[in-house]
Image (cartoon, rainbow, N blue to C red; front, side):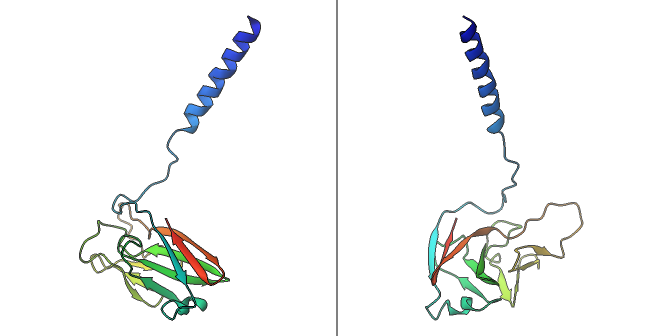
Length: 151
């Protein structure tokens, strides 16, 4: 009987720990952008993507099914790549919400916000008490001459 109560207590503690571990992870998913799943292989030997062989260069991938409104991929140096959604992150996708590139910055025609293609951060974030989102980032991993972009 003693071992049964010990097992019962252990199970109770285990259930308590499991229930606590199932709580929200505290991340704040962007409510304006729907979650999409995709995988895109980008071959840097192709002329369309060869700019990514040089540090600091970016390319825009406007292929249907890749992101919501496309993806910007940037070579941030030291063989590191970052990929960001091309939709303005601070409102729902619409006719003016595809970010437009000007060098290493992209801007939204809907609200004139600008974002860094190196960090995805909103530049000159307003201090008005409202919540503003940075660019939505996707996974970017390189294997040989291919950069895999996925969500």
